[in-house]
Amino acid sequence: MSAPHDPFLPSAAALRVLQPGELPPSPAVRAFNLQLTRVDKLKAQLAELDALAQSHRVELHRWVAPLQQREREHMRELALGLAEQLQGKALSRLQQDTATEALCRLAQTLAEDGDKAMATLHDQHSRHTLAQKKQAAADALRMRLEAVLGEPLDGAGEDASMEELLRAGMARLRESQDEEQARRQAKVKARKARQKPGTEQVKAQAQQTDADTQLRTLFRQLASALHPDREPDPQERLRKTALMSEANAAYGRKDLVTLMQIQLRAELADPAAVSRLADDKLAALTLLLKQQVADLERERAARQQRLAGEFELPPGQATNPNTLKQHLLAQVDALESAVAQLERDLAQVQEPAALKRWLNQQRDTPRRVRADRDLDDYV
Image 1 (cartoon, helix red, strand yellow):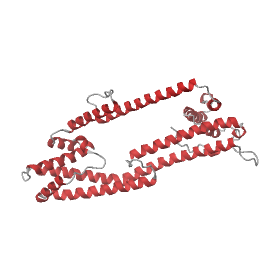
Image 2: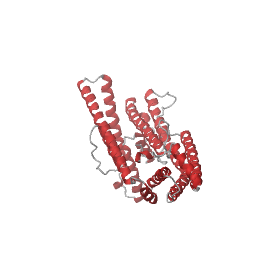
Image 3: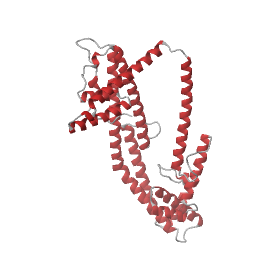
Image 4: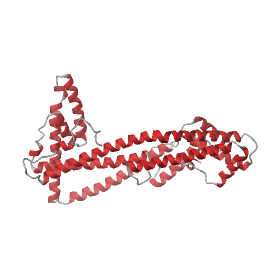
């Protein structure tokens, strides 16, 4: 994972190699500068994703949260209204069953959002308590997970919740995938070990060794120059401690750009030193930059995936301003429709004759469930 963007660090562009005079850049220089440009671009994209996520959270709080609150309030009113109507004797047995089913569905949804009073109301009217439903759902989930894994699900007790089961199941699945990948890698490694390395492979290995050596040398130079214990001035010691912490983290993730930026920031390097490197040394540094670019690309994809999950984007949709805006509009529209329907339901439940018509409609119409939860999992 890359470090958070530091506004005090110079951009990667400041590290570009410049050819002296009017000489055109060599292929090695062009390759090095290209990777620096890609690093800057990817870091900017990660910063844009962070800013986009934060602004979208604000929009969700502004538009979606109030509608969700109104929806919960109306659902609560409707559940309590149905409970009150069930106290009388005006409803037929079938109507009572329909009203009870609707009440339990509403109360369960609210209980899962933390409403303890609704949990109590649900258990008063349901044939099965919420605890029993959750246990039955957990047992069913355990059976499905064990069928997929082909083995008992270790690491989760008999009374484990669905969340604990899912974590244990996903952990075992990842473990199985890692084991399979390790077996494949071992086979590839063994096959390569039997093969005589070709010229290109030897060259690549030598270049990687050279790159690692240069990275290690750069870090050691920084560590020697920034060691806080050698600094008598308290303020300067604090500054060097912070820089040394940044350098340690950058070296741990093989972040050449940040190490070179720290060099410039601490005024420990000649900005033109890289320009004087031989092409083979520059190519080794370029290899490190390519690896850093690949890491940043993976981080960008992972962050987009996390945000897509957080904001519940449809599968396959990328996280960008347009998709987030369209999804927000759809969420608001769906919630406004749900709130309006609940208000109509409440008006009908309050009148005995209208209530009976409403209950009949509930039997004849596929029951509505909230878009963010499948209640059938717990029925």
